[in-house]
Amino acid sequence: MANTILVTGGAGYIGSHACLELLQAGYQVVVVDNLANSKLESLKRVQEITGKSLAFYQVDIRDHDALADVFAKESINAVIHFAGLKAVGESCEQPQMYYHNNVYGTLVLTQVMAESNVKQLVFSSSATVYGAAEQVQYTEDLPIGAINPYGRTKAMVEDILRDLSASDSLKPSQSPWKIAVLRYFNPIGAHESGRIGEDPNGIPNNLMPYVTQVAIGKLAQLSVFGDDYPTPDGTGIRDYIHVVDLVKGHIKAIEALQSEKFADGGCKAYNLGAGKGCSVLEIINTFEKVTGRKVNYKMAPRRAGDLAEYFADPALALRELNWKVEKNLEDMAADTWNWQVNNPQGYN
Ligand code: NAD
Ligand code: UD1
Picture (cartoon, protein in one colour):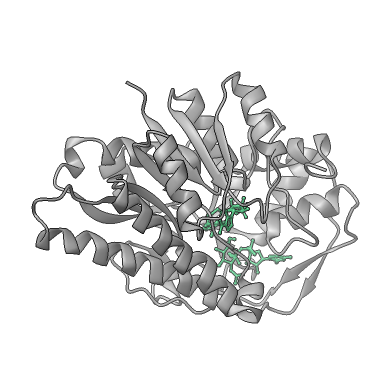
């Protein structure tokens, strides 16, 4: 019998890679996306690469009736919820827009899911929910303490999902919620085909897209934000994860939700990261080695809100989801570059 996954935000960077892996793994895929930060071209290419088709609905997840129509038309087994806004700076400028999109949007989605009795959900959370923890290697049991509106939308949605799951004990006659909250570290890279990848609007905020645009000559120079952190080379340390490894973690989560492990329901958070930190200078050096291109950079002051160092403890995901990363930093650099040179203007 078909196992159909509704992917919200499926036209976006991570969502399009998830659709590709889901199709290749034999799932049926239904995408809901309002195309606020993506282009349909990504899904056209996903279908070309896989030779399989998916269903697409241009719907805003906050539109209850339009979303309910999708659930009525399609026979959905589980939802992977990527749809959301993700720029930290923009969330500080326009917090209401972020709470409305990310928090209210998830309330509408879970309401429609409950009405349709679809209760398997994988949610895109972020390592940003840990805020400034005392230890640098994050375990899932650390307190939540996001430090910007974007991060708080993720923390709030996590709370809502835990409350929803807890409410099951008061309704024993209903089927329980089965929820996996996935806390991503720093996703970079692209599919090895070089046909889908990250296509940021305007000047990128994040490190890897900035590095590639400098290497290809679209941007003049990278600013390295801070060389005086208490790290071995003074630059910030993060846990970079290849987007294809990341989306495979979602398929492992779906498998777990549909297995005996979640027979009684529950809401559980998992870190998705490599478990290893890497500095800004290491990223630049690896990128230069793999691509043979120079990355013009200068040292600059620290960026407000940045932490010196953090990385994942991904042991729980290995133990309970049977997932770990397979790709290394060289793969991430090579695949990002392959996408960039083949698509200098992104999907345009
Ligand atoms: P993205 O912007 O490329 O994809 C998000 C998609 O959601 C876009 O296609 C956008 O059009 C769609 N969307 C936004 N609001 C919507 C709405 N109200 N209704 C329907 N569609 C809507 O971002 P991404 O990098 O693919 O991130 C996907 C998810 O993962 C987001 O929730 C993001 O917060 C989370 N996340 C991303 C990162 C990262 O570094 N990229 C890290 C941690 C968590
Ligand atoms: C940022 C967000 C985080 C979000 C994540 C993925 C902030 C404070 N945090 O994480 O909430 O989940 O993106 O979307 O924005 N760097 C430079 N020069 C640059 C860009 C970045 O030196 O031009 C450095 C940063 O200081 C950091 C590292 O590169 O040390 C990674 O930065 P970035 O890719 O923006 O990710 P995060 O800041 O970790």
